[in-house]
Length: 266
Image (cartoon, rainbow, N blue to C red; front, top):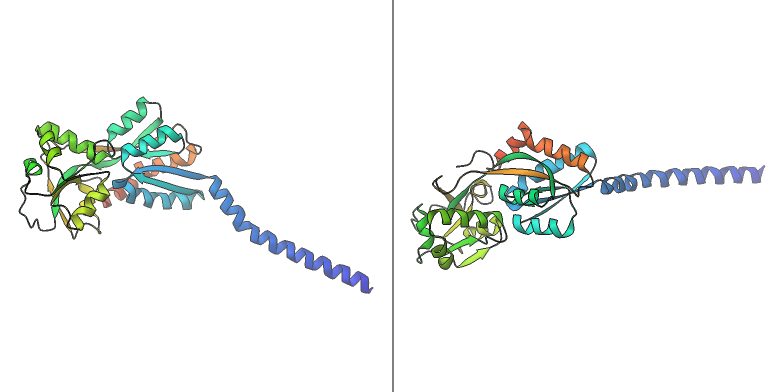
């Protein structure tokens, strides 16, 4: 009897231990399942805020993980070319998406919002800088522009200045070239620059709005740029990526983009 009791007790303890092990394994299995359903999004820096908001929504709905790689749109496109890994691409200008389409990197796209470039100065415009593009060629101002070879704002700046016929003069006058919109905003916030060209949306963000002002550029030179989200042909999870695209293109998605200055631009 005593032996039978001991065996029974041991069995109960073993079953209890097994139950505890199974319970503790559940979160591990859930994490592993989520990690096996992980989306990788290549996102231009100016659009990172609405994309991050939508990512949190899709993660909850689909039980997946979403990783966002941010940077200059041109640099991101080069990464896609080389690595052939990832699910979605959102550059700051549709011209990059056209290149991705021509190279067979993207299978389908959806429209999600607008970008528009603006001149930007420190809050209150303490130097009284004119909204004329020719101000960018004035050596009295510390001018910074984006690098045309690394990001969408640099490419758009060159296009604007070429339309105005002053790109060589501005390029010679610029004290620095930067890779992306985030660095352009930082240089104004920190008081390093007097005048930059940046995407209008960055002037509306809480971390920037108290420190800089946007001066609209005439639409003859700076038109609204469509923002287009693309599904990469190398996507491992096109079903989830498709749901992300559908949400971003929906009325609620466009409202989110508008919240961050990426729909109604001036």
